[in-house]
Length: 173
Length: 245
Image 1 (cartoon, one colour):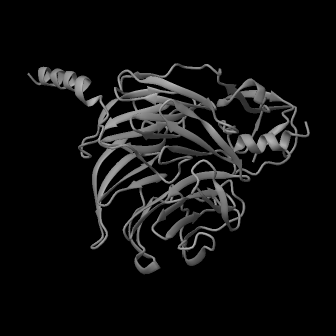
Image 2 (tube, rainbow over the protein chains, first blue to last red):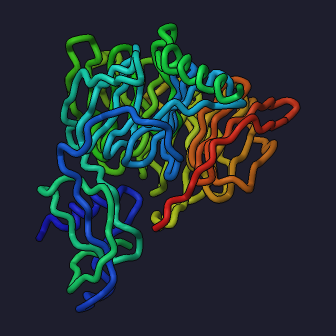
Image 3 (cartoon, chains in turn red, cyan):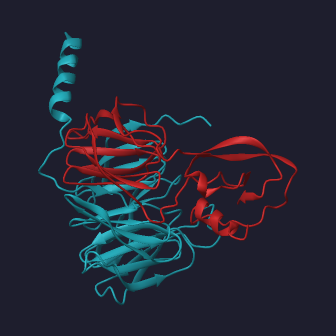
C-alpha cells in the first residue's frame, strides 16, 4: 500500500489535499467507486435532453457544444444566440473535454481519445481512437468523506455510490 | 397548422442543419480546457504530461508525451507557445517544433487553482483559494509575456473566488463561481471593475468581440456586451435541471 497516497492524489484531482483519515471507524457511511467498463457505451447521437451537470463549453461555426460531465455532449445550433436550438446529444461515456478541427471532433472517453467525424451530426462516425498517456483522471470521491480505495486495474471511476463501509482506508479531505 | 410548420422545420433541420459548416476549420473553447489545437496538432494536458497528437488525415496518433509535473489543469496555445495552468505555477512551453514541446519558463506562485488566458503579449491568470486548496489567494494577475523566456508580473488585482476567464480587446470577464461573473476593463494594464452578475453561478466563459457565453450550475447564458460604456444584455439562457443526489 505504499503507493496509496500517490494513487489518491491521482484520483482526487490536483486541488484536494489528501492525508490519513481522521480515524478509521469500524462502520461508517461512505462511498464506493463505480467503474466504467473500458468498452462502455457506443458513441451515438440521440435526441436532445435536458442539461443537468454542465461542464466545459465549445463553439464551432454556428454550433454550441455543452459537455454533460462524464456523459457526453449537448449540441445546439446557435446561429441565432437569442434562440439556441437543441439538435441532440452525443453520448460519450466519461467525456469531459473536446475540440474540433475540420469537422472532426476530438473527445476523451474513459482514458481514450476518440476522433469522430461530425460532418453529419445525426450519424457521427468514429474515425480513430488512441489511448491518452497518463490521463488517469477519474471522478474524485466527494470531499470530507470516507471511500473505498480505488483499484486502478478495475478501470476509470465514473461515479460514486453511497454505502456503509467497514474500516475504510481512504478518506477525501 | 403550427404543428405542421414545426414538423416541416424538423425535417429541414434533420436535412440541413445537422451538417457542420465547412468554412470554419477550428472551434473555440473556454479557459478551463485540457485540449488545445495548433495547426494540425492537438495538445492535451493530463495531470502530469503534455501529450501531442497528430491530426493529419490517416495519421491520427500520439506522437509525443512529455512529463511536466503535478497538478496540470488547463492549456492555451498562442503563437509558438503553450501556456499551462497548474495548481502551483504557470508553465510556458515552446512549440516552434510542433511535435516537441520544449520547456521555456515556470512562473511559480503559491498553491492555487489557476487557468490562464493569453492575448497578445499579456497572460491573465486567476489564483483562487478553493475549498480544496488550503493555501492561496484570490487574485487576478496580469503578466507581461513579450519575452516568454522572462515573464514579468505587472499587475495584481484582488478578487473573491476567481476561476474561468476570457478576454476580448480590453474587456476581461472573470468567473467567480457562486460569486458570479465580473466584467473588468484592463486597458493599459490597469484593472477597473465595470459590472457584475452576482446572482449567477459562473464556471467558465467563451468571450467574442461583442458577446459571450457563460456556463455554470444555473445554466448556459448568452450575453451581448459593450465595455465602453459598460453594458450587459442577456440574450438567452439554456436552463439546467439540477441532478438529484
